[in-house]
Image 1 (spheres, rainbow, N blue to C red):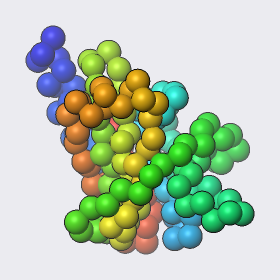
Image 2: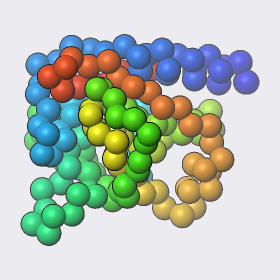
Image 3: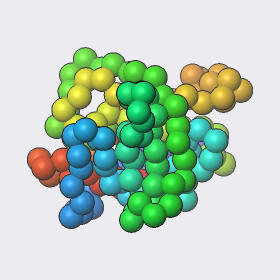
Image 4: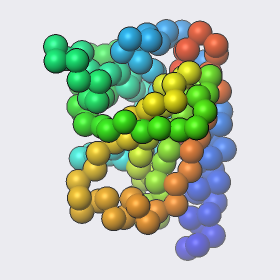
Length: 158
């Protein structure tokens, strides 16, 4: 059981380091990023099946920069609007970075933070209180995607 989990974690990290080329262009204002996961990932309130998704800052009239919307690959279906809080890191990266919490072997990894390329301030996803304890005690792995310099972004998870 422990070996299986270790192999799964190593597979996830290896796959996250691989970037799939994409023709989508991210936008600085809404931090739109096209991401591909080859394995399900957990977000607050649901699990996203393997697939391609747009992560976008919500366009709100009140200037709230703490809402993330997740759409399907052609932006025709909104899967979730998630509240976040600001997350800080020491150095910005030229690439998209995610921190995943590795939960029980039966659950997919949970996205904890998302940093847009070139930013020291990112987005920490807000999970329900009952999930916070498990997330806090879980092992966290930060993965920096290798994306083209034009902020075209894709991440593969396995």
